[in-house]
Length: 354
Image (tube, rainbow, N blue to C red; front, side, top):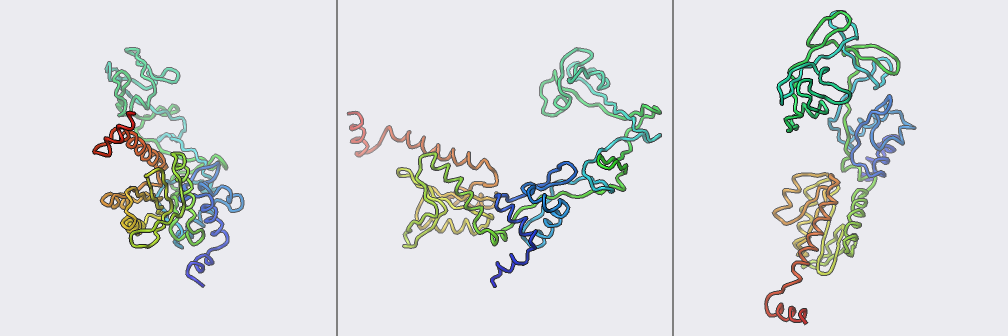
């Protein structure tokens, strides 16, 4: 039994189901989303009908320990210690009488006229208006942002405190409590379940389940871009190099005398770039592209001195970048079509004049 087969058979049915779901949907990374009372991972909504979200989180952990996933920091969340719901409401409490009847008081300054007052004095319906100069300031967050350059609409937060409307106590920092919207439990940060919500990326080992799945899907997308630009496209193209060896490229696109050769790096390995460099030297092609699905910055920097264009396949903007590259080729061709130099150029230009 091969090593690859052994790795796959070591998976439980649910682990294999989870991985297969991600691969079939072409999802290289899955992030957590808060949905109603639970946390659901993107792309795994379908299997969450058969496997509860808590079990899915365990599966993601075990698949990480087996090397099929990489865990990375993303977010954290408060869960109810009684029913484990994520629908938690956080409230401020008076430090003196423990009342929930607390209001926040902010002092703000309108920088145009220098007026300082309570935020409530500025609030009119859904916008801020200066009580002194009557200038419409607009949205509070935009007006207080460093990005706001219009002095007419610029405000500065001088300070803030809290006031209990029950006992009148004023304080700088309130106490806090949490309330579960599902079961009604009231608890503090001491009792709360506070958990990390990481996101997960597939590793190269997933190729044991679906060899070249991500490469195939991506090449089909790139094929459409070239065809829309009028290129003839061949997948798994074979070109005979100077060495007499057939060099295979994931995609070859030809239009007139233009030839683009492209390989896809599914996992961002430097060996993929080295292999492409070897093929480039053998076929002597100028337009060589490596589409890196992981966005490894090392590949991009290594490709420059060898005149290999490395596109970041992790950023969906690579499609636009590729289209611009092809558009520039068309423009250069049109610009060079008008005047030809030398004896052959003169003859060609005379023919055009006739």
